[in-house]
Image (cartoon, rainbow, N blue to C red; front, top):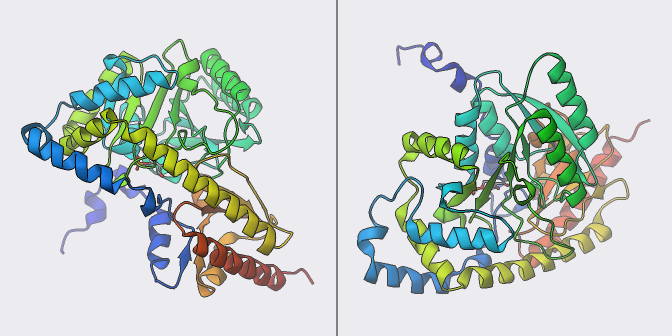
Length: 407
Ligand SMILES: Cc1ncc(COP(=O)(O)O)c(C=O)c1O
């Protein structure tokens, strides 16, 4: 090629980085490796038998809709189901609030497209979902991290950061929060903290993007309302997805937002993909109509709850005392911390030699911190792999700590 592509690429693309997780996943593809790295649902969670019924019926009765383009806003059957579904969960939405997306990652991209100019400030959690950071980064956001404590994003530090920005006449575009069984930490923001964060958002006039792919998957503890449902001023944009409660292969999610923002997102989506796949939407809509989604969620909760108990049991048995971990009440992940002077990217090499994998914590910190942490997914591995894999991880960590003992 005789063109210097770097002179042709947009500034935006030059700042984009390959997803660390996707790169690591390539290393973990060897069959002998037990991987806790990907954020994959268990294949056993997929409702194959029910789907066969629904797909047959849709192909028999309405192929002309399912195989056609749909409206940008969403397929009518799915839209009706999503309104019912959202309102049953305590929200107050109508068609005007709803946009069907090609999964939550598209939601993150559309929100970025609508709000972020190069250099715009965005507040993120420390740690935060790597795909959110990637989306904001690709629109050249200037991210500001706010650490979490046991109750969620620190309200005190959030206020400090907003105050600081205010002094320079700056307003962040939004605060990005994954409040339920967070990816990567597994923690859930308490109701009190949600109220506090929302109050601060009102005070400083900053929007909130609430990204919540895991909230339905609670296996213990009390349900906490969405920040969206607490908001009576239209500040919160909620992102939902069928990836973890149904199947990521369908690539369908949704956004609830105030009608003005929702209409901007619709326009942004038109130039991205015109519409989400009509086939996926109509199948999910009919699947929900039959009451299959609730049953599937119940099945997943039972399956993952059991896996979470097992992984905690194996952590207690095999991990050295220098390690600590979060204990999630739902979702797919937990976060392990090791002594602060150690770096899990070095541990990763030993772990791969011992045929076990995880994601290094640094990937979830936009500022390069969190090096002594790692994310563990417990939904994908079988129960037997959970046992073997955590035994291997414990062994790797003991070797690593021994090798790094200060003289
Ligand atoms: C917090 C969060 N947001 C968004 C997504 C993207 O999900 P999807 O695009 O499959 O809906 C994920 C996936 O793991 C996630 O953890």
